[in-house]
Length: 333
Image (tube, rainbow, N blue to C red; front, side, top):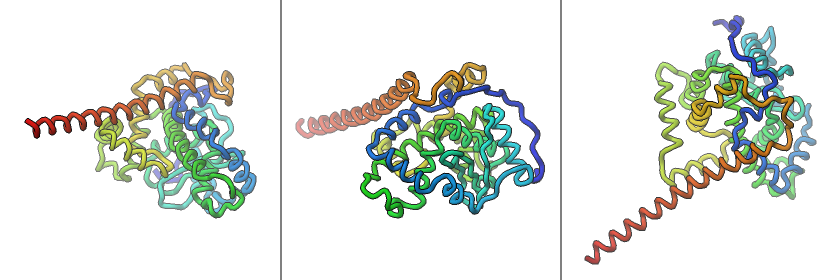
């Protein structure tokens, strides 16, 4: 299909007045609570936002980008309209395409968030996968993620040393907490991307391409999903430690993990329940503070993770002790 051609309208279930609480991952909400409790965090946010301002952020990220519209990237414009209609989001955000080979996208802004789509992503993904990534970024906007994500992007792009007005603040804990929440917020937005497109195959295939590149004919989706499940479920305590260390300074979880997490959400039944109309409405929920049920679910999620790690370490220690005991007995017999 030529770029000037606009894809035909897709049939999706409109999720009228859907609240982001319906798709937000419990780890996202837990990490956000932790982030807001870090000493100096609120002060850092105010100083960074005050220094750059809405106009400064827009100039920084839009100076070398093309605004999507009916006459520029019309296919992307139609996709944006489609996902906003499905998510019942009347305030269409601006969408920009920026020339860079790196495959990425972002929801950026302080007061009026916009979506920035790298040209590398446009080239790599097919129409259905591109629609998923636009829905993903819209999910960030509806969830109110854009402010904190923008703050982290500014910190990582410009560098803490080049932000002298933050002097006196303990910035490493803030940066690490931001990164942890940023990664967990991706799990929420992955669900939003699926709901916005209602295309499970494209949603999973997007992760496969992000992990392995663009030649889908050389890859197999089911084999990739099996790899994703193995990555999440297999390995001992040392593997768990490596997984944590490998992501400490990363902005995104591994694509295999994201695929496995989304697959669990689908097979768990929540996705189908939402499509059936059973979900929380924006008109029924307050943005802050989170509902008690969400806090409870978040606590249960991290407690489960911690128990699994402790269990693995304890099991490994018992096996090592037993091996030592057996070896000692053999030498003394």
